[in-house]
Length: 258
Image 1 (tube, one colour):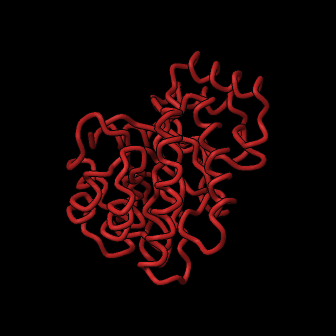
Image 2 (tube, one colour):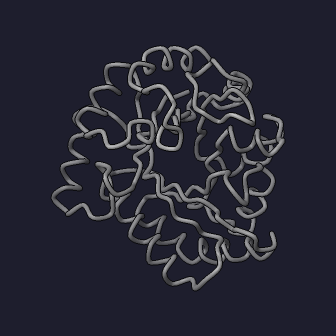
């Protein structure tokens, strides 16, 4: 198991400080949140992208993914979605990130319609992603939060440059067992996101190992070289404890599971 950290938990923190924290506490990879006000965003110039890539390389930290907020299954025309995908794929390639995270966001559309929409768009861009050396990972989230619903969509795409990002929280909320999620996603799996919470009625992030999610059961099923990323959803939960003081203990918990 290779431990990574999502910069979502450190909103607005300069990249140099994120890298210092990651190195100091033994986190080998970073999910780079792509959003305004963050060190990584689509507006970075070519020189700024090179600077980010150099900083990651100098710290010996793997840029595991560019974590976008793109939705691929929603209503509307394909071309704006494809243009957005291309822009994010180029950013990931420029930073040396092997993955681009996207969401389904099928909304209220019938499941078959949402699947077809996402598969059409992802299929149209998959060869370009492969040429850039970036794999698009659709997260278990919103309209496709269970393992089998996401696997159903990915089976329609059927391309090695499109896979799954397994967010353990969302498959658990969908009622999946860990074994069922892994069985459904195994053939498509890119990597895994973990977190911890008190229960379905309170999703405020907790330190790893302090909540109810089946972390040990999940990690035990994974191949030894799988990336496992701690996504601490601080921006959505203002009462959550600051992440930085939790990184040492969280790393120990995660490495202990692997």
